[in-house]
Length: 575
Image 1: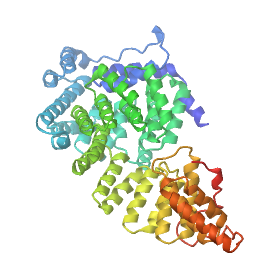
Image 2: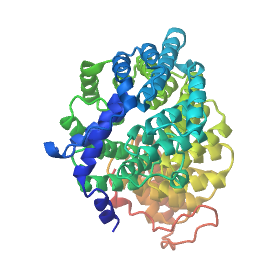
Image 3: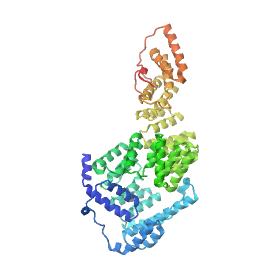
Image 4: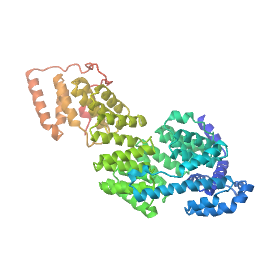
């Protein structure tokens, strides 16, 4: 039923194509290049229209005619980034288009001066201290026009950007919603609004127009809010509705898979994307993150060289090169390239976070903290920055701070086992064992990525002399390690086998104890203990032949909700 509703909404793809062509023209006239690019990519994914079906030229008013010469001249200066010059010739123009370009030129002039001053005087970590001096004047002028209801959709969008830059976030949200209602097809306004939405409740509370573009926005928001299942369903619906050739949708699905750490699926999609669009630079920093995680040095090296040939001064290119040097453990060089990325774009979220990681590798905790805090300023939803801050304070042995930051990361990624394990470790350091147990068990329940939760839970039970529960967790841990089919570097199977051997021996389960001892002999660090246990078992058996006791003794009463399992059939597992 839901899909049928969507299809009816997207029923007339020719009409959507017409709307996209119209909005591309409107955005280009106003210098909104990123919105024009997004709409152009989407229009390219749809079938071309016959000549008779192309949209008509927008209405040309008397004011437009009077401002035409000044607007044409100013736009040529604007395109050459001579923003003050463009604004000078547009002063006094009356048309909506000329007024937008006049205000936008002033805004961009302030941004350019701010960036130039930052590059000349400060390093990337101090960028937040320099402000665009034009913002307050622009706000005063736009506010008067807004009160008089004289702003069109584009100028409302600019007013929202000015408010956001001045940290007037509540007012910015209201103005962006107003801009979207006035001009639903302007993607830039939707994107700016998405950066200010902090949770699903806030998203649901907004009064947004029921237009086909809203589905793209909702899919984008679900990805941002880590609601990946819902995002993937939305994008699948959009593909079925007629956007199957859209490189934008392919890239967004790849990013969604990256966010849930489905690395193979994400890599396959990024490789497909590069086949369709080999000179694309957008999202290639995310692709490089995946190559980094998989330690694919040749592929990462090829990607870095390829992007340098296309455009060496793009933010994404600098991030890819930074990841390449980081993978080669050249952390100073990596940090240098992330700094270059931030000179090009101080609001590049990935570069701040990755630079934080590099400073961590270089043991420069104060710089790492500063970088992660900047990442959070750019986007409070970035769980990696919160998690990075937690790790930094862990190094500084400040568990209360760790707990705060890991909690923030956990709120953003409630089903990520790494956040839960980190939370458990913090609780353990603060002697809050009950909470630590809950975190470790929850990490195991949601799918423990690093296979550490059960081991930590077992060791915690062991410290608290809860031997039944410790044994139970060690059993599950061994099953978990061997069932995943690959031997993990940090796997402590020998630790688990040693404990289980002693546990079964004390409880007079000599057959199981013997099996554990035999398996201990497969590991160098447990071989001698395994042999010693086998000798003990042999001596006991020589003295008296004891029948095996009931293997299903009840667990001790405590807070860990472990389920009862039978003793391991250790023979069935091979390391």
